[in-house]
Length: 329
Image 1: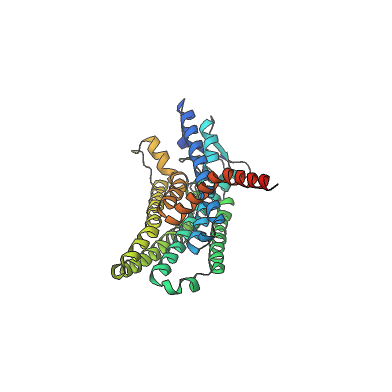
Image 2 (image 1 turned 90 degrees about the horizontal axis):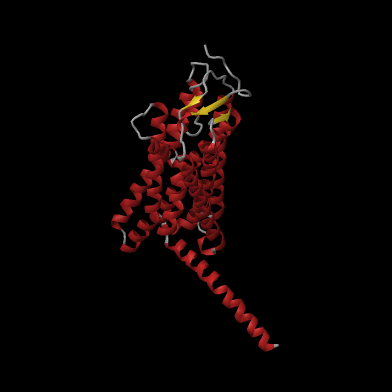
């Protein structure tokens, strides 16, 4: 019989890393490049939105929250991922495992919450344009963002309190990162009531089903308005809704794949593809969102151009000012 271990003494083994051989240096380099790209792309857009007064609107404030969450989600996985690629043992202590669970799960819930409130923003903007500024004031937007983050942190924190109290008889996690469901499966107790209730009530209903249902309703109303609207309204709706839909579909796919693979062993998927798909939500999604929003939204594109133009002309402006002051002197 396997001996039980308390949280203080147990370490888990992330078995999906396997023996990478010399390929580990290639994987490490790719992971590092992705991480740097995520940090740079999201940070640049956050700075642009902060600096440009024309972008201090509800949609762009929600985007700022989304971009912060992308950095948070990527950071919850990639630094640890890079360490384990170069490591020989692939062990992770229980404390660090629980921290990673908290970070990754809160990232996912905040992502869904933010995408949901962004759908509401698009619904009000397109279906109730005359009341948009009255309904979505800056204070309400800030309050909404704060509520999403606090509720998501509390939800995952409560879940983790139950997991931390378990005693563990197993140590092998068939993934490249810690996931709550897989860690609970390693416990000595056969009672999975808390895990099942969380997965169904909070994981499936509140975190996924409710947001997706509301987003679908919002887009149904937007579509009905656009069918009767002018060409200008249709163009505006297409420009602002397309990146949101792409982001949503992409994230739902990543969550669905993670949900399936955590509960069913899928051995037919090639190893590199399995790793990419299992980390999709924390690697591809955080890089994809700033790219599609940066390219698709004209206001962000124009703000980027203005910032680059200012940086390019700045030396000449200072030089001209200096020469003028010299002449006057």
